[in-house]
Length: 344
Ligand code: MN
Image (tube, rainbow, N blue to C red; front, side):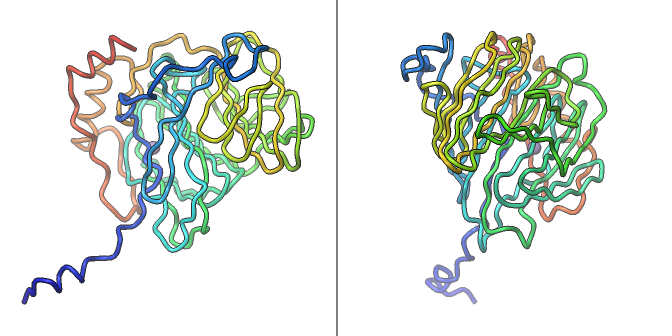
């Protein structure tokens, strides 16, 4: 028997936290306002440098800062998506729960500063990742995966979700998954750099990438400064995930992204004790990407075919073990997609 008033008091408990959504479908919203030349922030020694603000989202209990793509910059090298989430408490809540969803045309880079995340994919991979380790998933022509805080997860969660676009010659490559528990590190002045993708200061990550890139985490065990060598053929971005730092005289704090055009040989970093920064860079891609939801393609047909194949259970395989339904793609608006392709 239903008693009005009782039902109101018997509402189910608060929904579990849904964290770290990884969808580009909202990127049409983009970052308000134009990029600020970094010189406006005082770094007169860095011609062409730009400082941009993240688009902010509150997802469950997590703050998510989307730093790429930007309207004026769809990729930096092959890096085409940068989300930074947390730090946050996930004590006693479900934490990250990203149901099975598909990808094409990219590699996903999962990197944690705090916490634990469990990856499953349609190749049958099941891998727990911890801070300082790399999960690298190559979507190629198609893969599906889920990411979740395991049941007995750490009480804190802080990390980045990055995408590398596959160059046109490799975008239909076979899907794959790599876990790297150990990654090379190099000391740069007072900074510790862990290289998870590509090469930095003569140190190379074992992870398989498909274009010339660098991806590194810089940490300051104490107040520190260091000169970070850059490949002059690469463009770069630097952002702080925690604490306070500066690149040259441009202050960096979580939520802002500094772009450095190609042509530089180094950048001087100063950081307060405990700061964490990320350096991402690569050869300018020289290709026009069309990004929609979790797909990186070149044409509206690439996107429409991937969406149709996901909806009809083809191409991407099945993720087993995740407790919950797969994500459905949002409605595809062909007119809007065509306009986006023309503007890309
Ligand atoms: Mn994903």
